[in-house]
Image 1 (cartoon, rainbow over the protein chains, first blue to last red):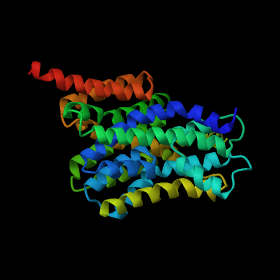
Image 2: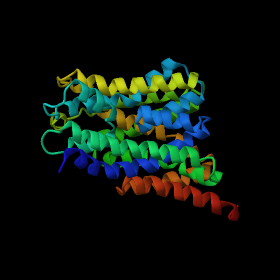
Image 3: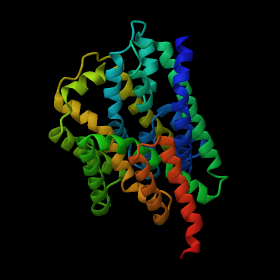
Image 4: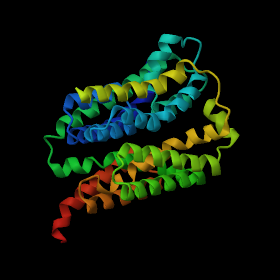
Length: 235
Length: 103
């Protein structure tokens, strides 16, 4: 099969998942005081769930640019690792333009699908995979942002929790399997609760930075990742 | 104007994180501490973003907590992301709908 269509087919389930999650992001953005256009613009230019949610909260709190930049850096630093791992799997037709273009679409789900493919990946496969996922993400944002003002508040408020449901569904199954992840998740939650109760002056961006960095360090020191997982991630 | 500049800051930061390693660095990270730190970061970030925010995500604590408990149970049994996400929403909606009849 043509690699572009092959990629599109692999992206359908990602797009469906994105549609419902970005729908709830669209609602959240409008509830935070953004326009439909601004909500869609964020999804078009960022293509990342956790970073966009944190970003919208910071914009609503009128946070300074430096805090916004640092928060995005901490939340999205995982992409650096994924980009690094995925760059080892690319075939020879990946030159500068292809790399500059496809790196925009490295999300958790796209990385997960692309990195488990057999052999090397081609640029056209990545274009197909990213394009369909991108359309799901942006389309869902538009629908959520536009319908957020039409639907009754009970429904929009309920849909707003979907995103957190997805976050829980991402962290809980691996936490069951790995004690390191379980400890990191619990330490992070505890730090986050303590900071939001006892340091009310602290904005949500810095709570995320401090709690997440502390918890990941605890994990790295007490439960270092075995060398075998390192090679798997880079394959 | 500030909003558009903020969006630009978000977009450029996020893009730089993805683009620079994918385009310029080809060597593997060998430091085990940094490797492990980067490995745990996504879980730590998602956990801090979810807790405690999930407990007032619907603007009403009772429905938020019930939805969160449902989500945790379904996630524990490994159900797909969409199922967990939409079940949480449904649980929150039903709670808000039915709660007035019980109080």
